[in-house]
Amino acid sequence: MQTITADQALREANTPVESPNPRRWRVLAVASIAQYLAILDLLAVTVAFPTLQSAFGNATVSAVSWVLNAYTIVMAALLVPAGRLADDTSRKRGFLAGIALFGLASIACGLAPNLAALIAARVVQAIAAAILIPTGLGLVLPSFAKREHPTVMGIWTAIAAAGASSGPVLGGLLLQAGWRWIFFLNVPFTVAAFLFGLRVLPDIRQHADRRLDMLGAALILGATAAFTTAFVQASDWGYTGAATLACLLAAILLTALFAAHVRRHPNPVVSPVVLRHRMFRIATLGVFCYYLAFAAMILEATIFLTEYWHYSILRASLAVTPVPLSCLVLSPFSGRFVNRFGARLSAALGGATIAAGSGWWALTAGTTTDYFAMFLPGAVLAGASTALLQPPLFGASALLSADQLSLASGTLMMARQTSSALGVAILTAIIGRTAHPDLSDFRLGWLYMVAVGALATVAGIAYRPGHPRDHRA
Image 1 (cartoon, rainbow, N blue to C red):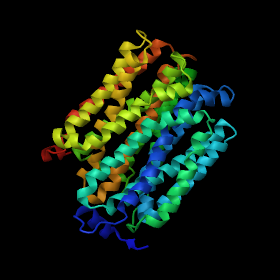
Image 2: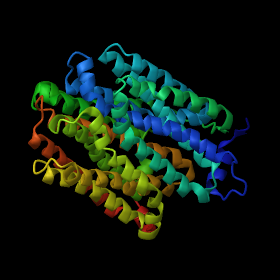
Image 3: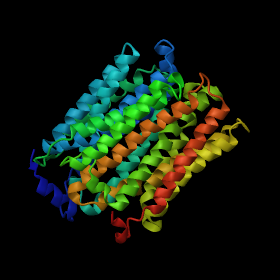
Image 4: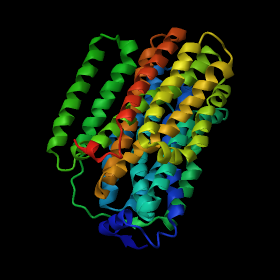
């Protein structure tokens, strides 16, 4: 296979290509499979919480939540270092190694004899996912002409949204065969992606001489884990308990150390250079606030349906289907909406829509148990919010120079993963105060989502990528 140098890749990404890679759509298909699986496994386990509690000796919700949190936190911390390592060696080899490791880790998850082994296997799975997502995008974009990049990014973000939204649905369906099949399902797809990838993926290398910022990744990992632990364990340790306060103090200290570290490292895991771009900084904040709500919303919807309305896992999974369906139906039109009404309006409406959906649930819960009157409108709004917000804000990476594309994309994805972990942790603290949450707990959770959805709306209003004067620091 022909090797593409860094200069050639950048020229391909920045100039119209008369003869683009004839296999470019196959490259996109292979990378999309990996992206979908990596995001799907982020939230597919949410519906399995009650089942995992029973399977592992009546484990607590806070203990089981680490099956989700361990994956999210590790993936967030390693996205940029893993992508850079692949850039400096071979993106194709990095992708193939990542998809193989993801498949093996999925088998280990499915065979886990206890909760500790499952969490450990999820950590390995997260490492593989952290390799797959940035290398996949790094293989896709140079294969397409620049004029095709908006279309490609629209497809890429729609697949990510579909993976996140359909996770609970597929997870619930697979639970009918047993929770282990949530992980075994990945295996045939990883094998297919590996074999197909061997044939169609280009071998892109940058040969850059850069230091990997593993210390920065460790600081992010530690800070996020400490914050998450404080929220998840607060109900057991006490909200003002010594252990809870110690975790919060450690999180604040690690965050401060990370902020000081990135100013000194030549190639930090999150570069101040990209964050100095005002519009990119606003987009990152918008993504962060949105996923504080979205990840919590998916989990609370499942718990509400199973524990408060007493739906079966299968019925609850089918009940949340309007979330991915509305996202999939609307995503193909998101590009047209942005082109006609602007990225600013689309992003702002995305934040407002998830706030409205959560607000609807908070207002109507307890007044009726009619699914179509109470739950369905909020689910449709939640799916629509993803189709509206993701394309314009994730497209902010295109505002930066071509040599910062991978770093910018990794930073946005890191914001998504970190906030997802924190959102789940905060929700666990809200509704995990008792063994069986009541309506007031659920309503408080939805009001939390309204608040952070409103913050995402404010970020959307401030996002004006078409105004060069707003690109200053």
